[in-house]
Amino acid sequence: MVDFAIQKLLCASKDYKVSGDTRREFAIMSRRLALDFDTTVCDGKEKQEAERNQMTQVERHMRVCLGVKEGLDSAVTVAASEPILTEAAAIVMQQPGFQSCRSLRNILQWPGMNKGDRGELITCNINIDTLDSVMFEDRQLKSLSVEVTSYFQALFASDIYTKKIQSMLPSKLADDGRKQTFAATFANSRIYVTHFIKVYDYKVVSVEFLAKCATRGVAIVCADNQPAVDVIFPIVINKDKPITKENVTALLKQSKNDVRFSTKVLPSIFHAMDPYALGVFDKSTENPPPVIRMVYALASRKSGVCVVKPPQRKLPPRVVKQKVVPKKKKYAYTSFDIWCAQASSSTFRAIQTDEDEYMRSCSSCLGMCQRCSGPQDNISQPMQ
Picture 1 (cartoon, one colour):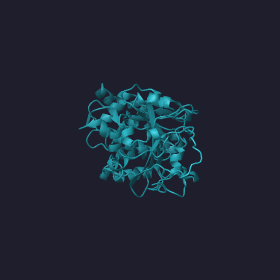
Picture 2 (spheres, one colour):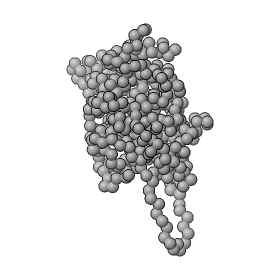
Picture 3 (cartoon, helix red, strand yellow):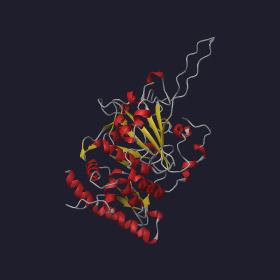
């Protein structure tokens, strides 16, 4: 069945060669990443070429045409979420010589490609390669779901996980009962993500929706102009229990493709990634499970991974006139916060040293987003 799916994706019965053929590269990569066309930004010959490329994907590579825009000037197409086609694409990506970052660079040079707002395509690509490195062994599929701790160990280069992530404590704590290390908190948790889909409704981001995504191997690329978050992974907290909204939490990711974001941690960005404000947790939810928040400073000139430490505990005065019972904070949650600087092999294990130039090329194709650097991101004191 998977072999047949590969044939349908590549529009070929025997020749599975992909590298160097941008149409086939798009057919494969669009199954894993939320790749979209935006032909409205083109005109003349470029628009004709963009429309031709888009309809070729519909005719030959299993892309779905949802409709035609008013005026019949452009079509709306999508790579529908289909697990068997996603598995087929993942297997093709394991073939010798296939480099996802090189393919992504080739695709982004096509006219009429929707390149996103803040470099989220690069963030998604890094994470797909990371997940594949854990799901596959010797190019053979081992498991479609991975342990959270294994994923983070595979995500970062060298021994960053063992030195920084494994023993980190929450930077934001809902109550003292959850003051456990990262490894202890997510010891029995798993991630099942094989591909990304893009949502176009701000209100769809909720723990109920994440629970459904967790059963289908889907991570979310948020709608354009979605505040504070670009990508959301569902995490199954306890792998031994059924997947319900009570057994699912979120891994929130924010991308910054601007050189002004470097190794300096900006607390305001994490503060904006509030799972209650974003709608991940309903306002009626009490004692929600811990979340993970990550910022990818992709265009940083320096590489580095920083974990946000918990605030220092203030000592009570020596003389206490009256014992005061602290009130429980409304909408309190526990969070582990990580800042990742530079899309390079020095930061992410999935990027090989000979791929650093391709990643820089991808960043150049995506350009610098001016929306990333508003006043809300400026703060005088960095966290360490």
